[in-house]
Length: 637
Image (cartoon, rainbow, N blue to C red):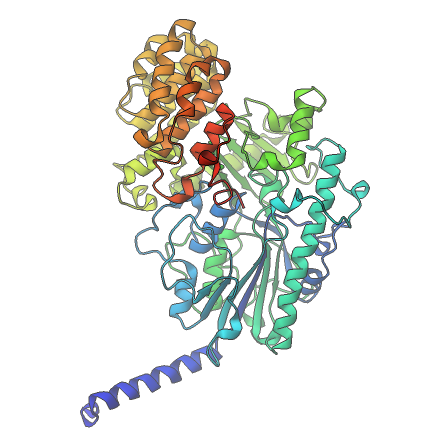
């Protein structure tokens, strides 16, 4: 037993030296990895063939590396998109889909930097996080504006993220602006009206993308000056589509298509995607859920089996996947439920909330001039059909677009006999995906948290007793399909023992309007007393919107009682306030009550705190500091 020849301190020293030697050897076998990211812009870059773009730094990187032509963010807004990157789980599967939210991590799961740090990497983030899940104390060595790879130990491999905020949505509307791009030269998408404000916003957007490109250029020059360019794998990507309305927040190609450029120096070429060619372009379908397993693979770490993405580089890279998936949940203070899928050419969207507009009044989005003038043009009847889709209700339950002939996704082919086979293929593939990841969207957000009761939503979803996925999926599919013949089945659902099934039964009647509601008044009146507050709310909205005047008083009583966040919690209050808003002038008797609500109460986490106040402001016009003090903190970057 040789170890007995050494004293305890000597044995400890020997073990420490052995560990250092081991780390040094493994460091030499592992690449540095640099991620350069920017916010709120799609592939409007020179390397993607955009003639209006001025992006010399990333264009040069692409000339040496490779671009992915068909890369998607999985969510069209930052917090769920970044959470998907950080976890390797789809937001709809982890429960982190809503903007903004906070849910526990799945049992045993970690953020990808935790794995890298455990493997000996120096992990830095400069500086945005914005995750919908908590991080650990070990996630980053440094996460701040001062974070930099140069502070690592000698010989230690690094993983570093540098994010530019200069292309963020808020910068599109900042005035005054030193204009460079010519508004007259902008290509206006078919869904936007060709108005001076729209042209100015698009031109300013291109200027801001150039500024983000310049930030990336600074980091690439630093890398080269440090003599690290040939030791470092570089990724560049944007966090979702442009900050313009109908891109950001909307889960079609316009909101999910992102630039993604990768560079593998010769030393690490063996880790590159199989199709990698310097200056090349890949048709491989990749998305944000793939980034965590990919970076772990590059570091020589086998991705955990629970991760839902697929590594597209490194020794653990997989074969290309046939589809990419997108999802939209709550956008700040507005509820929606959309799922999307693409095979690279066709994009299919399933609207499970067809009764709400794609352009619900998210306060932050309406700060952009384009949003306001577009809405004004629509209200004045001055928009054509392509420009009006964004504002109309109901949405089509299904949408299908051919990117080869309709890059702006304004010609819905869902009812086209010639595209029936494509529709059915994508519909079936999406259904299989939702089932595989056990999409939590079929539980209202408040119901999800209530059922989890200390569990991570991801773990809740795998308990069939607490989350009977197939039953609830079928209920939602039936409710949102808008088929009038489904009303008898909706009546049955409305009395189901499961509160979520009752929710879909009642909201299915609401979605069908006057004919369905008038035929089920006794059922809906009974639902005003349901044990589930969310069922009571949708029953109240149905009766208040489409029922007889005699039902308005009990409807307003129910909604008034449930609108108080300090008594009911933020999720119930948000749902009640949205229903009150849907009633329009009928809800005027509630205005005094609304003005007296404690808007910032009832939030389980500060990330939710601004949403009830925003709804109250929109309903009452009261913009007092007490109701808006968290606006900046909780806005939508």
